[in-house]
Image 1 (cartoon, rainbow, N blue to C red):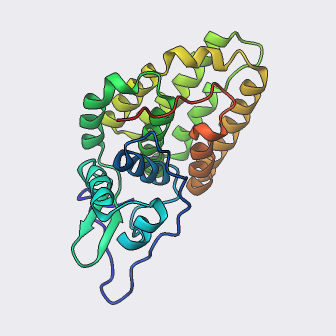
Image 2 (tube, rainbow, N blue to C red):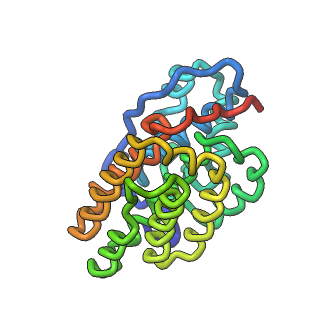
Length: 252
């Protein structure tokens, strides 16, 4: 995890690590710069781009997305404003550790459009929860073991399991000691309220979640934070969810 300054440290004697990323096809109905910003945000939230990684060059990104430099720079500026990228003249654009204060400001502005948009909610949750998960490294293993108390019950009703799964996420946030992160997560989960109970009406989704909880909880107790991060990221990724189909980002 990076320092509180959120600045990317690099060795000027070594070439920066340039990310190798797979980009989704551009959807014509989206405003191009917004689509590119959303796609790069997805790559960051799912761990395909990590703090310190350098984005491909402008020329490469323009070619991959099929857009002009002006359109690409609009997208980069969106992520720079959100605190997800740091742009260094002459060197390029680098991924930063998420700035939770900036994410809170973004959430306040985007709240009306986020309700019901499961894809954007999931990506924002990924950014926040991966940061909170990294903070658990400073928490004693015995306290991390408390998360076992929040495992779903396959015999419980959907509403009770939804409440238990929420409590599991929020207890993870409380253990991290980051109150701002806890507040952000609580707000985002509330936006998902219409979808959460219906998810756990599906017995397969209940079993999948129980298996995910067991793997993450065990990894955290063992101190294997890389494994916990991978499992949590995959679980929160809407592309791998067995729940409702995520609402697509609307055209700007």
